[in-house]
Length: 141
Image (cartoon, rainbow, N blue to C red; front, side, top):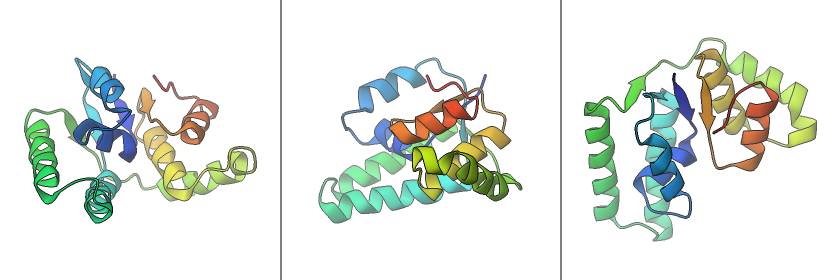
């Protein structure tokens, strides 16, 4: 079994927020989580945004980066390329579900990647993104 977690789920694993307990519970004994270049880019931006807004110090961010690296070394994450058809599927999902669900491009791109990478589960705390993943046939918990 494999799980694809969106970027906000990843951030909740490493920076404490309202979703952190649930994120940490899900990864306990969980399958390897898929990690794409999209995750890496959004992860770096998220940590920078937290520092910019003053919700994380540079020390907290460095600890988060270190824990992420430790989890990579422990094989929590499985590197995967951004799927070749991800953008085409992203556009297709937008055409089919955008008028009803109102998702953002990056949210739809995450679901498209999860589908293309054949993830068994899609983990997110974003309600619209979860609705899209379910509509596309994925399990979200």
